Image 1 (cartoon, rainbow, N blue to C red):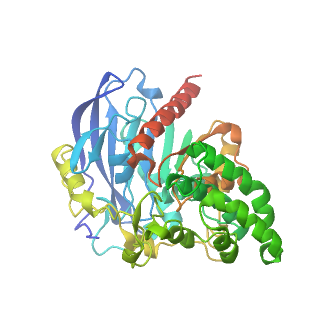
Image 2 (cartoon, rainbow, N blue to C red; image 1 turned 180 degrees about the vertical axis):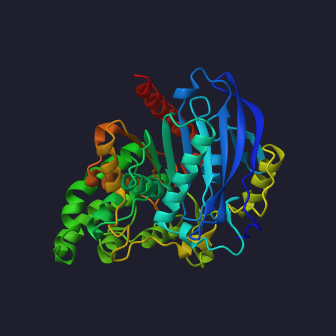
Image 3 (cartoon, rainbow, N blue to C red; image 1 turned 45 degrees about the horizontal axis):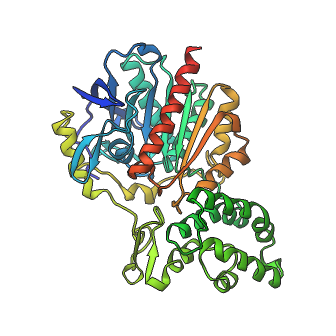
Length: 462
């Protein structure tokens, strides 16, 4: 990443229009630079946000504001910004209006964390504190609070949207807010849940099995029997939560005859031979599955999106670069830079970083003994926040074909943490890790998020 030469607090506003659901909407795009203080109290970095605010809505005080970021850590907001719910979207190298944007029901603020996108450290300053769970969460909260005050939206319904590691960030923000006795948001949207904590090998195998079955369904390596992917996923989940977990918790103590019988039941669910399942262990190794499912065709599946394949012979990279479904973002960065300059009037001072894996590799999870986040799972932070604020609502979304953050894993973590079922809306989509990058997934996600946001706005009016 290329540091900034000096701190800057520029605000650039442009005006635009879009038609959503047959309604023409005039809106302002506001690019804001926020200097962030380091440990010595002087600016150590600048965070850039991209806001889209509808002009003269009927009741601006009650209009929700969504604060949106992706994950990594080390990812910019560009996937959700330019391929998800922003008013403009990338189609190859072309920028077009996004029919699935949420701008008709809420104002949208996309946040590039420090070291990503256009948000960079200042030369000669120590930005290390921003590359940790707590430091990142506090910085993001500061940016949100500052934006709301500067734009007269301190009383607006607030919804925080995070994807992948962004779900950890969102829940860490709740934890930091609770400790500081700060206001909590009205809604939390968690996409491709990555909540930490893992679990026992048995429970990890259990929550992964439905995803393996959905992937086998997609590649037609099992008999679909007329089932949809949703039906296949549910059938595998029912098996995983009954006979499968009963067997896997026994580990090596499971009698061989029972292991062989269970492997025979698993084969038609996940598309691997029963002999392979029994030999490798009924707790399926993710890498073995990706390499084994389509081995007869000489192919391996992706991990972020298992629908994507590559020849096994060409898969000679080290993780995470060996994933055929992984994009490093370099192919879109130039187009995003042009969009920011030509349409939003903002010239990025250094090359736009869609993804910065250098941050990912050195991230401080504060998980060591005595660390602020040594507890493992972040889900209890959400349960505590919902207990403190009885009106807080939660939306979760995952992809059937996402092996990085299996859809059932996030739901299981929330259930185990005691997050109230009656205050969350859970969805699984026919996509990989990035729901918004798939056209059909983007449309479905938009419909569900419209309903979620409308519900929060209606509750605030009561």
